[in-house]
Image (tube, rainbow, N blue to C red; front, top):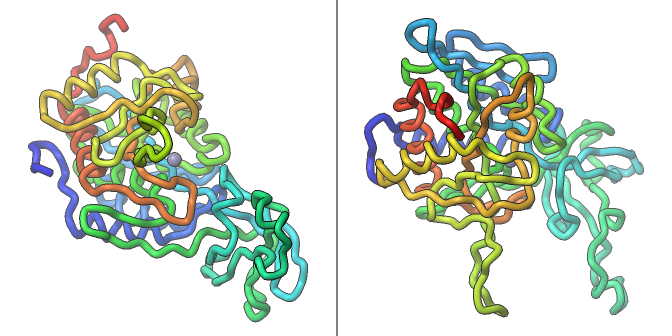
Length: 357
Ligand SMILES: [Zn+2]
C-alpha cells in the first residue's frame, strides 16, 4: 500500500470505524444501528443529510459551482440474517432467513438477537441422537431453531438475529461478519469526508439490498444522478484447486485489488465507466481485477434502470465466505478500492458521458 495523492489512507481510525460497523447488527429492514453510526460520521461534512421514508441515509455534498456532475455513490447498510417468526415457548423460536443464507452456515452458531444483542444459538439435533442416515443428509432450514436459553424474555417475534461474530484484525487481513457491505459503508463515509470540489457527491447508504435492493431503488429516484458507482463486497472463491487442474470459477481473488464489474445478474455496467476506472487504476499503479461476470448483483441492478436510466458501475472489495458467520478480507484490497474510487472522483472528466460507448 503506497500513499497516493487524492486518496484517503486507511489507518487505525478507519479500521476502528469498520470494527464498529461490522459488530453492529442491521439485518434488512432493521438498519438503525448502522444508520446511527453513519449519521454521526457524515453530518459535519454534508451540505444536506436526509433519512428517507424507507430508512436510507441520503447525503449531499455539493461541489463548487452549479454545473457539477451529479455522482451517486451507494453502499448498503443491511446484512443477511434471520427473523424470529414463531414463539415455541421456553426460549425457543422458529425463524426465517432474511436474504440468502445457506443452512450449512447456520447449525450450531452463536447469534445476537434484536437491538439488545441478546445472546442465543442456532440449534440442530445433536449427532449423538442421530442415525447414520441423518449424518449423510444435508442440513435443512427446517431442522434448525433459535434458542435463547429461557431467561431473556426480551426477544419477540419479528426481531432480527445476526451471527455473534466479533471483528478482529489478523495481520494484513480482517475477519468479521457483515463485511458485505460494511466495507462499502466505511469506504463511502471516508469518500464523503474527502469529497472533491468538482462534483456534487450524492451518497446513498441504502437499506434492504439483501432482499432486492429496495432502498437503492427509491434513493436513485430521489437523487436523479448523472451516473452511479456502487461500492460493495463480492465473494472471493480463490482457494487452491485440490481436485482439479485449475480453479477457474473464483469470481474474484484476495490481494488482487478492487473488483470492477463488467456485468452481473442484474446489470450490464456502463462501458465508459468501466474503461475510465481501468484507466485510472493503470495510470496510478493501483492493482485491480475484473470480477468474473455471472451471478450475483448489487444495488446497481435497481439504480441503473431508475427514471430515464443511470449509467452505473459496481466496484467491490473481494471477501471470502460472504453471507456466513465470518468473512476474511485484505486491508490492501480495501485501501486500493478506496484509492481507485477517490482518484476517479477527483479527476472525473465533465465530458465522460458524452463520448460514444
Ligand atoms: Zn453486498
